[in-house]
Image 1 (cartoon, helix red, strand yellow):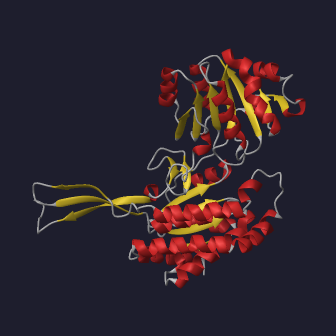
Image 2 (image 1 turned 180 degrees about the vertical axis):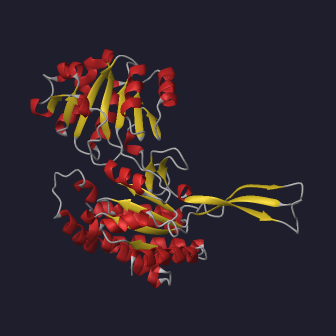
Length: 415
């Protein structure tokens, strides 16, 4: 079957989804979650085949890696999605006109959603569960680096669908070659939306070449600003968590901005990073402050290239600023508008930061590690949008729906 026939089959399957009851959808999702846990050993064998082909020092290695703990977490996310109320069918507004026409604005599925992603086999589960819950069909275009993992995951999902007599074309895994990507980007007849998840290069390619509408899930160039009024205990805990919890994820800290009046506290803030062996690229003032207190082999003088960089590794830059205004100007210049944070105790400064920083998620006295669909109570996420049209931040059930107008009349005609 060529790609056009594949897309046509998925589009047909998406229409069949509209007849499924919420109860059947939820029971299938719960069964997939249970089977994922039951087949953990099989999934890990296939995942290891992918891992064996990747350098362990590659920033994508951690994203590719599955474990029993991670599969249990994925299964719980699927259960969480099943337990949510679907937004499909929600009446967003309703009114009756003077001529008697009753007009309703009703939430409906997008139809067919294409996801292009790299080295993230968990995305196969997350995307399917959210799409299936909202009666969308999905086309998965994973990278070659996760080929074995994605095949076993999609095979497992199709096994459950077939058992319940649901058209298995509602989830389709494309070949890993580039032509399949190019074909999907231009399949305007059959695909309603494309969401790329991966490197900035991948996202730029999709945006520049797609004829199908795209929601960007941009790179995460993340800052935390430690203000002159910041609490040192909160600050050091937030920095170490945001940087080292999982260094390869898009909400991980890349640049610490510190007010010059608090430079004396920088050794305390960075001390916890020593045990984590975090490599630091510090501007001159910060370098001079910590050079005798941080391992020489892990401390470097920063240059311009270290600001505006998504490290996706155990590395971080430090920039000294003289004011809140300088901090927010730096963020405006270098941020990818994903997640930004401030550590401060002055409420006026906090409010000014929250109001002036342009990002999908802006935090006060908290780690940016929380930018995640499950953490936001959305069950899971299909991606984190850094654009402003239609969806922004973690995208889940509501963000992969649209609406239509339903107009009920009794013979009215327009003069």
